[in-house]
Length: 113
Length: 112
Image (cartoon, rainbow over all chains, first blue to last red; front, side):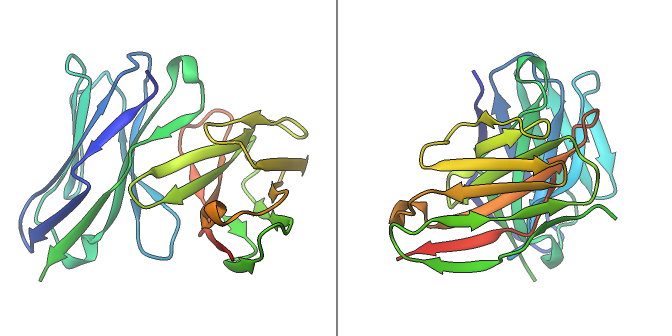
């Protein structure tokens, strides 16, 4: 019930392409869905987040698409750049879990120049 | 700028040693967390604290304990380190009313 499943585990994209990472959750009480970005040797940092009352949120080249009925959400990186190469974690929190955040297993993205 | 500081970035310890990982936050955050990061397993919650002297077990608390004597400081303790505790440990803080988690840069622990 508390799991967040993330795919793919790793992703290689050509510079300028679109990177897509998918996540699925089980607990319908979750009400906050963030994405974190982690560069090597650093801790994860918040990239973008969405609440279930909207189906899409865009910040620059980064977009979250949210499908409440399917219990899925995804991160789209448009015009992917080598500087986007990092590990991305989806997460979910809220509801009966309170402030506890459940993380996906992570996706390692490599953008080829 | 928000800051979570983990004082030890790289440690090598022997099996059976007692290990302390220290974390300090300067954001006056109520909630603090210790996660463990392993390849393919993501971030797994070890312990968290929502107030001074309060602590709750996360998903993988076995072999670990924590201490929160002051609001800004949250320590992770490995009572008797074992090789399967070789990992990257991440401390994080979160405000009482916010959802965003702020991470430190991580502590790489190797147990030999």
